[in-house]
Length: 458
Ligand SMILES: *[C@@H]1O[C@H](CO)[C@@H](O)[C@H](O)[C@H]1NC(C)=O
Ligand SMILES: *[C@@H]1O[C@H](CO)[C@@H](O)[C@H](O)[C@H]1NC(C)=O
Ligand SMILES: *[C@@H]1O[C@H](CO)[C@@H](O)[C@H](O)[C@H]1NC(C)=O
Ligand SMILES: *[C@@H]1O[C@H](CO)[C@@H](O)[C@H](O)[C@H]1NC(C)=O
Ligand SMILES: *[C@@H]1O[C@H](CO)[C@@H](O)[C@H](O)[C@H]1NC(C)=O
Image (tube, rainbow, N blue to C red; front, side, top):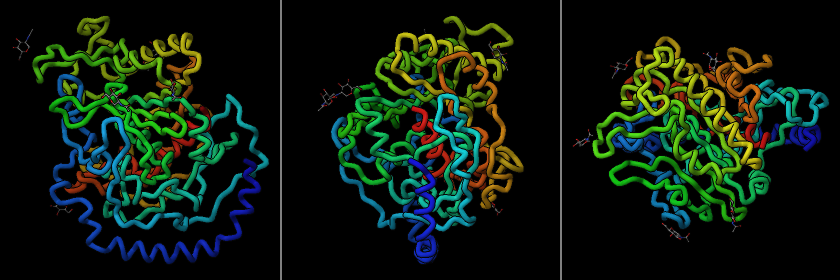
């Protein structure tokens, strides 16, 4: 789409839109100050609500995460492989647009060259866009965890929803659900990674459905063995199919991208072998079925999480004895290089597979860390600028590991770094204990942009 046409078309109704938005904002204020809003989550739910963040959700010996997650809405009864039953929707206004604080900044569209293989999508700037977000934060209850839905919290500011990313040198088409589904006809897109990967998965589900209830979407987790194990609180992942185009979107939880094998299957508290040089069994088993694969890892690579999960590093099938590798940053680097070289080799025999490695999602804890009162209270966008001018990735580990391989980089680090105001911040269950989540993002929000960049490159 030639964006020029688009822009002049959009400019005209702006004053009308502003009036509408003003009225809507008033409506919102009224709504938000209504204590009813607080009842969306019962008090009990607040306390039961653990989070994957930041200390690990302990996993049991099968590698299954244990704690209940109050996902009530998104995991509401969904027939095993049938369609999703109707879910109650909060009487919600659909947020079409909210006035952005700054006028629309635009690139000179003439500068934009046709997309090319080498286009650097991570270089560009955030621009205000009243057509964002791509789905309503009051909607998407089927797919969006309530813990990540900022519209369902007491958060009063939502200006972070109204920006889109404009790469400086690439033509990035507007995300369009039907063209995405057509492009993915008979195809499967898989996310494998930590909770940030899960945010990206939920975001893509919301973008694809437009946040609308979609009774057609089938839960096909069973095809991939993604069923809740007995005694577990939730499955290791989810898979949904859009029957119109036979498109499947899947997520599998693998925070370290290592193969995890309990050392004693009959002992729930047994240590878990963390095979640094062996990709997760799930990935090896189902790779044949993926057309697009998006990997990520990073935030679980610290001593606390390894200990809490009882992960014991293994290399070559044996407990690791190499002191160098035993250092966490080295273990992480070693694992990333291993999974990348394994996957790169697989691509020879899987020519239709498009593989991406997403760079690390930045954290924004100020005045402390996640466990020492760190916070991210800024609500003013772009206090550190709205532009990324560097050519290389900020995530040099991933960039280095991908060099010379057929795996593409999904570089979201620097552009996300500019968005410290878009995290869950203190509006989380953890906020009850005066701590903030400056790791996960509000949805709708930044992971939507990651998906736009991804879809543009598929
Ligand atoms: C539903 O799932 C079961 C396995 O749980 C499978 O045997 C059956 O074929 C599936 N039905 C449909 C309609 O896909
Ligand atoms: C759906 O897509 C899969 C590939 O993901 C393909 O194997 C299967 O034949 C397709 N089913 C139909 C009914 O077209
Ligand atoms: C495995 O765990 C079970 C249950 O705790 C225990 O009885 C058994 O001895 C363990 N096996 C090994 C080889 O340690
Ligand atoms: C990561 O591992 C690769 C491959 O072994 C090595 O070349 C690179 O220097 C390592 N990077 C760091 C930061 O340790
Ligand atoms: C949270 O902070 C407030 C004021 O900063 C303080 O009064 C309160 O005791 C704190 N609560 C907890 C659980 O630390």
